[in-house]
Image 1 (cartoon, one colour):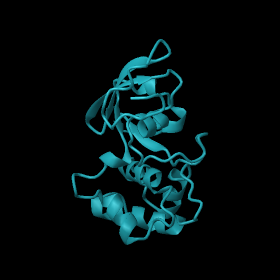
Image 2 (spheres, helix red, strand yellow):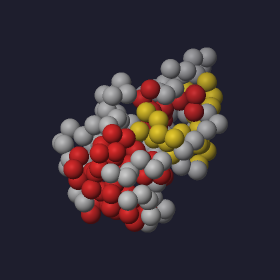
Image 3 (cartoon, helix red, strand yellow):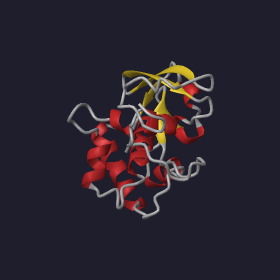
Image 4 (cartoon, helix red, strand yellow):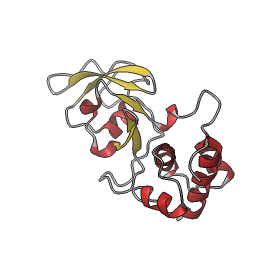
Length: 177
């Protein structure tokens, strides 16, 4: 492996990792990944560049858009603002870990049926937040959904369809009405 070449997903990091790297273990979507990380690498960059889990998107890289939303220990977290090393020993869930095998999560199905995306770039972060919005009990009205989803920006303005998808999934999941 040469400098700049990325390892295959789930493999150890380059052997050239030296004193500026820390060996760590990240638990992502139920799998354990040994990695060598620079201390300043964000969780977003570790997921995308080191583990090649590219479903989580890099939008603003400043925590303002929500495209990078993942769950850490079951709570929403902006992975662009989280140091990867701070997630060691914690359970990280990305969009790749939401479906149950080939069975899509109800929110994923609702986004498809309600056309809750246009370009699709924000969709993974929107879905990760939408699931938690429902699970946390913040989906009783479209106004409440809008408030609790306000950290996820959609530049295509598909908000009406996103809210409709959340209501549809909430009803399927037996959530609030």
